[in-house]
Amino acid sequence: MSPQSLDLTGIGKGFGADDVLKTIDLSVRPGEFLSLVGMSGCGKSTLLRIIAGLERPDRGRVSIGGTDVTDVDPSDRNLAMVFQSYALYPHMSVRQNIATPLRMRRLSLAARLALVGRMASSSEVLREIEASVMQAAETLQIAHLLDRKPAQLSGGQRQRVALARALVRSPAAFLMDEPLSNLDAKLRAHMRDELAALHRRLGATFIYVTHDQVEAMTMSDRIALMSEGRIEQLGTPDELYGQPATLTVARFIGTPSINLLPVEIGADGGVSLLGKPLGLQVPARHAGPATLGLRAEDLTISGEGLPLRVFRTEMHGADRFVHGHLLADERQVQTLRLPAGEQLAADADGVIRVSFASDRAHLFGADEARIATSLTERAAA
Image (cartoon, rainbow, N blue to C red):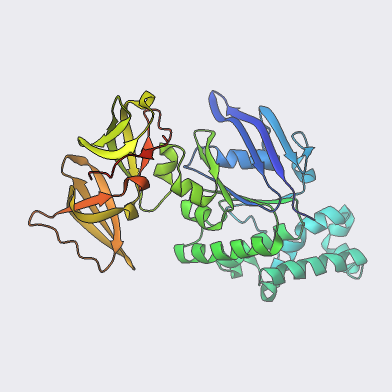
């Protein structure tokens, strides 16, 4: 089946007095890999369950391929869901687990029984099911595991079986709810590569829920970052990292976390940090306190910069993360990302001086929304 678009219009959902989803509008393109990402409790899994039909929205509409399916049963939406727990039948072989969705759809109740199934093993339908199972197993490189039981498989192999079981249905879209969270770090990295490769091969629509920003950033065509039942920003990984729309997005996306500094916007729209002008200009209506965001890689060591007292360094392969306090504010930790071989040249008190290019800074107003800036003169910092 060709990939399908998926549209959510005005989706709202509450549980008791708790308004979990607040007017969600979202369009997923045919063949797109879109991730729903955010902290636990932001509503991303509830939204996925509404798409699947496992939850009914209190308001709004769900459309697949232009057809309204808001009131359609889950079994009739032609969507395949992969869960965090894999949900494999422990008494069945891999072959039987993968075949189950097809047997449930294409065989009568009598033909699903083991005895009748064996007697009818030469039927055309069963041969087609077996061919579909084999094709899915070969696609996911588990054909050699078809006769094993789930207990005989590793976590990564079980996840491939769950994916194969979804794949045989040729669904309009794949829905995945944190499918890698039960795997160790090394296997998660490997499975990220495999999922991205599978998406490229199939050209199918993937909607992927995760709280792990690395998964979202490395696999997605676009990311919908959710917070408190709303979509804070929808865009490509580069857009969320390089142009965060809100302070929430800036804090969530990026490793290490973005550095945040209190700044002041003057009555003339000039921005200053610790009393020094930064060479940034914004509309005067934003006058007042604001927050400056700086990525760790955008801070550099400079003899004319701001004093930073270093209290810890961390080696991360080719990078060194340097953590410290600006002497004017001991409460906030600031982090630099430097090449591992670069010398710190701290003074006797462990103080270095850092600076940054103003055109690499992110500015957020009192309402935490991004403020567009223009350059005036070169930053004093």
